[in-house]
Image (cartoon, rainbow, N blue to C red; front, side, top):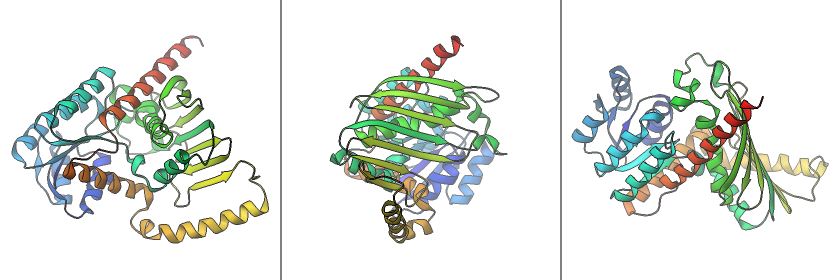
Length: 343
C-alpha cells in the first residue's frame, strides 16, 4: 500500500518510518512537515518526496494511508483532513487534548469511507498480547488489583523537545504517558475505567510525575505511577485470586504468570524462572536482532492496520478507544487540580 506521513518529529523518524521501511508491500510516497528542513531530512533518509504541509501532501501524493504524527493540538485539524480526503487514517496517541476534539475525530471516522486507528503500539506488543490471552482466559481468577508503572529519564535528555514539558502541547505525565496504560488496562482486561483520582507534581515541567488510583468495571482497583525524571520502567501487574501476572514491556522475558499459592522467594520458583528466561531468550532472539520487542510493536501495529485497510476488517485500536483514554486522562487532570487546591 502507498503510505504517507504528516509530521517528522522523533516518533516518526525513530519509530514509524523505520518500521514502514521494513514492511514488504509498503511504498512511502511522501512526508510533510511545516519545518522545511525536517521534511527534507526525512525525505532524504527514507527516499521519498517532501511536502511543505499536509494540504499539499493530500492534494499531490497518491497515498492510500496517511499517518498523523504532528503535535497533539493539531490532531483534530490534520486528522479530519485525512478522513475527508478519503484516506485511511493512522493517528498517534493521544487522540486529542480535549473531549470535544476527540469526539469530532470519532464522528469524522464514522462518516469517512476509510479505516482509522490510534497509535497505541502496546496493543501490538508480543508479550502484551500474550498477557491479554492469559488475563481473559480466567487463569488468574477474579482480578482484585492492578498495578502499573511507567517512568523515564526523558527530562534529563539534552534534545528533549519543548512540548514534552507542557500539558497544553500534549506533554507531561498525563497526556504523554498515562494514556498508554489507561488503554493497556482496557485492552488486556477488557474493562472500562469508571473512576479516577490522582496527584501530580509540577515544577519546571508540567506534570513531571503523577500517582493515579482508579476503579475498573470488573470491580478491581488499579494504580499507576508516572515520572519523567527517573529510569525507564514500563510494567503492569495483575493480581487475581488464582494467579499473579507480571509484565515488563522492556524485557524479552518480561511475562511471568505465577499461581497465587506459590511463594516467590522459594528455590523451586527461582530455578523455574531462570529456565524460563533461557527459553524466552531463544524464542526472542530473531526479534532481539531487529531491535527488540519495543521496535517490533511499531512494525506489528502497522501490519495489523494495513491488513485492516486492505481487507476492510476491524482495526486494533479504534478512534473510540482513543476517546476513552483521553476521557480517563482528563478525569485524572481534573482530580489532580482539585486535590492540589486543598494542599
